[in-house]
Amino acid sequence: MKHLCFEGISALSEHNWIMDRILVQPSGPLSGDVKIKGAKNSALKLMAACTLTEGTFRLNNVPDITDVRLMSELLVSLGMTVERIPESTLEIINPGNLAPEAPYELVEKMRASIVVLGPLLATYGTAKVALPGGDDFGPRPIDMHLRGLETLGAQFHSQHGYIEGNCEGLIGARIVLEFPSVGATENVMMAAVRAKGETTIENAAREPEIADLATFLNRMGGNVLGAGTSTIVIEGVDELVAVEHSVIPDRIEAATYLAATGIAGGEVNLIGARPDHMDMLCQKVGEMGMRISADPNGLWVMCNKDLQSVDLATLPYPGIATDYKPFLVSMLTVASGVGIVTENLFSGRFRYVDELIRMGADIRTEGHHAVIRGVRRLSGAPVRAHDIRAGAALVIAALKADGETEIRDPEHIDRGYEGLVENLSSLGADIQRLS
Ligand code: EPU
Image (cartoon, rainbow, N blue to C red; front, side, top):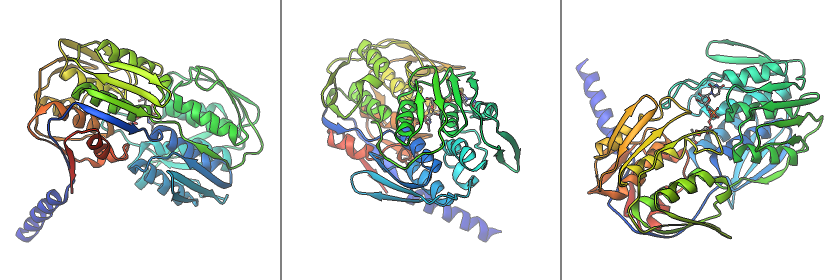
């Protein structure tokens, strides 16, 4: 028993010793250019759509991040081949005859795996996907995905932690989503493209990533109209072909560097960013005192004065994305005045706030509201990244914290960012990653 205890302790200290950390010293002003990578939340869905037909696909502008690697593993487990070739391109070969089953080992690591359900079901008449659990945001149900697919004629039953769907050919129908869920809209869109007849999705999500998926499906020979609006009409087709496509730039990654510039001050060009995908965010940070301007290369952002507090609420697109919120909260921690932030999408998405409080932030949360009273400077401390965006929010907050901030568990950040540390360092931030 003693021996076991001893082994436990030595394993723990070894684990601590090998753990990666990001170290940030107070920095700023930032200056220079950052090239914005392809959008994670589009790339993952386009990869899932490659299950719809056999052939060789090429996806350009795919970020080299953990979630893309996990989705690659999932496609490989279905029977496909995925290879990263130069210039951020993924070559995906679908040989047909896939095994339509997504195992728990992969789904538990990445909830977005659920988007293979619709296309596999529509293509093979059967699909089995492990049920995703909740996560740091709170519960993450998939009832709307299932109801949408049931309306098209699928039947589901769940057992042993898996959801299994079957159908004898899907039939187009009118689906009214209870809430404009991104994942449910995508799952239904990918299934409907292979259904017989016309499907209409009302109250569809309007995110730019939905429009990118529709462009991809149409390039494959699909017939999807209205993506980017609340009503999407899909006429099912008999045949689809493998194609090449470039992923849209990541508005959330762009927002991260924008917010970093707000916190540290300076002037940064976000090369390739799409200002038209970030309207509400630009308006909000403008109210906070930043200067933002669209230019032919992307987005120019500048901050040369103290930030002013604002109130904000997250909403489905085109509202302020819940994924921007952690960065905006970091900005508000060092702004003048008091800001009230309301989270309308994910019940648990304030959990990381305790880490900011450890850094000296003055934040009170009550249900889905947070009241943030700006302080002049934060104070560096060891903190933990709980998820992708919360981790990035701590990194950028640390730019205005006295002393050193140590961000632990940075592998959460790697799920969604390629080169966050390198990019901030190239802008002049004093930041490094220790292994
Ligand atoms: N919801 C249900 N039932 C469902 C589906 C969703 O109740 O069947 C609820 C959710 O619990 C949540 C709300 O609807 O309260 C919105 O969820 P949505 O389905 O729109 O989100 P998602 O598809 O699971 C995607 C992004 C998230 C992003 C949200 C909201 C991907 C892989 N993920 O998630 O991005 O926050 O949309 O815009 O696209 C991230 O990139 O870090 C991330 C979490």
